[in-house]
Length: 366
Image 1 (cartoon, helix red, strand yellow):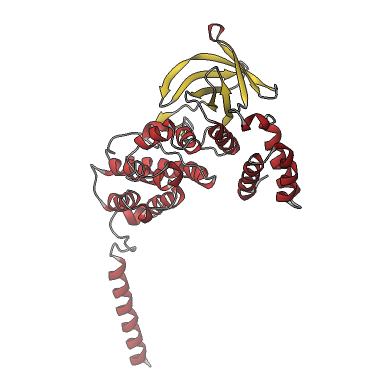
Image 2 (cartoon, rainbow, N blue to C red; image 1 turned 30 degrees about the vertical axis):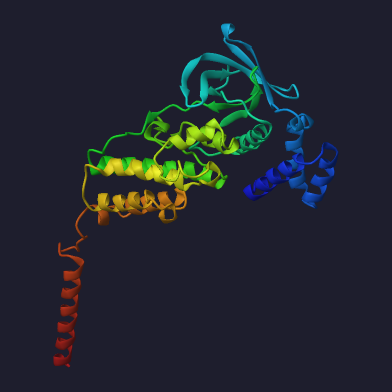
């Protein structure tokens, strides 16, 4: 299903069906989907994926099983129905990232490098279901600026249901953190930031937020592209587990003023816009000039304490950046001059005087 609106509708119908007794779910789906066969197929796929739905009424469900032995450096990944997803070779433990334990992996020994992230937080019944729904949204993401989510869901390793994510490993050079040394360097950074805004906007378009935007999480690849190293897992987990330690950890991150005051459910893409603005403000702090002044105006809007005054999405922020970059000659230097080296205003005056003189001469000759 290609339309995001239909995907969201499928998620809503699935969630409502799961709130009904197992025997009534099929009939509800048939009624809710009406004549839309594509929508019905999408909801049925979700129901099939969560075939152990009856257990969700009494205990937290898991969607996958991870087995194997760390001493032989591999894990097997299977769905709850027993379908084999793949074997991940463990290439070593990575530093923890907030609530996540992380391992460098390579799927089936042949696949691309990936990162296995396990959120060490036991999920309740409702939280487990919400994580499953959010995982489906992550698996749909397809944008060159975002790492691919290869597999996501919940797993039980003995503590109860916990969230896990298998994500493509992204390599590149992190964006600079300190002030830019020159206007030319600042332009290159802003070009990369504008490209990054496209990736962040893909999250916003799907109802997700990143929530941890920083230079270290944005890298420039060898081919000159800009990519995020993760699709905002902690923000996803916090939204799926309200009033939990995940939400508390998310609130403590970043600097947007509304983060510690509002529930994660009430936050939106303007949190990401604020963090982009703080990054931009640092870059411009040691420079001056017309370009810097315009970028500082954009950063100021993005960092407004009242989020109603900010750009409403990463796309709007990126559009403002591109508007500054586009008219390079007008933004960077003095006003353009005509072929004689005079300003446009002076040239217009000279042309007017010449035309008047020619007209007068013509009248005299006649």
